[in-house]
Length: 178
Image 1 (cartoon, one colour):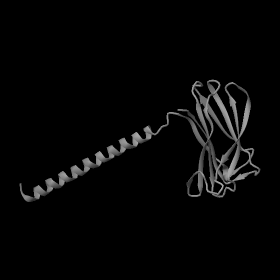
Image 2: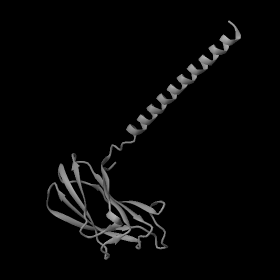
Image 3: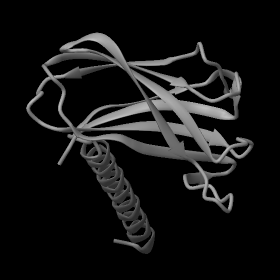
Image 4: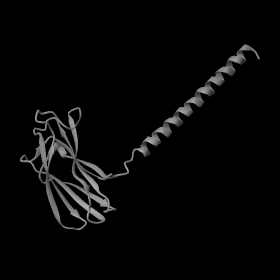
């Protein structure tokens, strides 16, 4: 073999080696992505949804509504209110009414809850990202639904301002208690 054939052979081997390494890297990346996407599911979560508030102005009549399908009433559930406000929100708290119906409830029940958003010094208590602050506040712990079936929840703002400004999202999370 002369020198020119040796160079061609070694360059060909280099390209084959690079191509094989690239395929292995893509395969590893694909497997990792698949594992992350399938492994990140929360087995205790029943629902965790948020609803955007149009123009960040939450009026009394704009109730946020969710349906929750309870399959096992023998276990306890934790219920959370999800709220996101902008830095322009002018209060340190928020009052909401949570309406619940379904299951053994013949009538809709309403309960008023206070969500603390800022400390007495004015520091936001939620998780901040830019000028947005997120809160997930427990309002029922180890709660037992009365029966298997569909339950309906409505969340309504219960402040003096109408509309309540600088509210970005409102939501509900229901999970099995551990």
